Length: 282
Image (cartoon, rainbow, N blue to C red; front, side, top):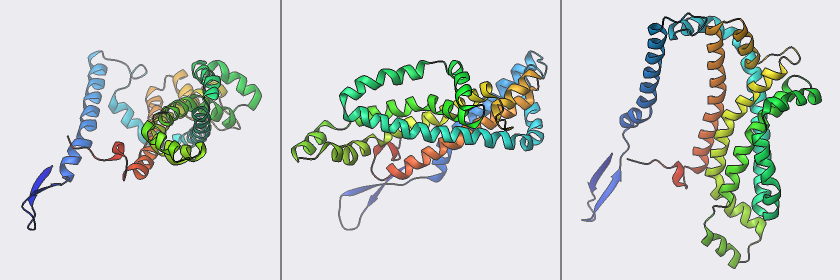
């Protein structure tokens, strides 16, 4: 909402942007709530219209009724998957950022490494996971590496794009001032690449959870600790669909928590100076 205010000292009007909390609430909360209501209504209509049995597709009410009993049983598996996914995410973030720095600094490194980064992204992870089980054993180590393998490419690719998208005029200004390549990289290119870095991290947040669960599908229980992937596999084989849906919802929560942390970190770092984090009025 914009309001025109006449200041007493000058005759020129000053335009002051006044944010309306109620309007912000309508814009940010109502659209996803509306989409969720429509999705649940369509879900229930599908179940009722085709008279589907619970073991094939449970309705929203059956899933909600199961939540109370499923939550205590899902706490430990959720913590296991969270540990594997978050460790894999951190590993992917560090490796992806460092690889992108090297590729942005030396063109020969980009030509040498980038094809293998793409190759890593295209390898079916279910074909590699059994090898990791042989080398690392079943359990957290294998699932963490699988999560990192899936999450590293979006971090590296987006960071590299950001590092190479720095304003050319500023790069030339640094060069004319005699700045070294390392100083230019960390004082100019890295700050300008931060929005791209966080875009890669947000994509990697979901990918790491997927990787951890895929690793659990293959690796199963290591050290007696089964994650959500193991629970989903067990529930599916026993046709316990309401419990399976609860496990899927728990996996979504694990991913959303990490995604939310990256969004908050981006806002805190960029809100004072970068357009991507500033509020935009329609």
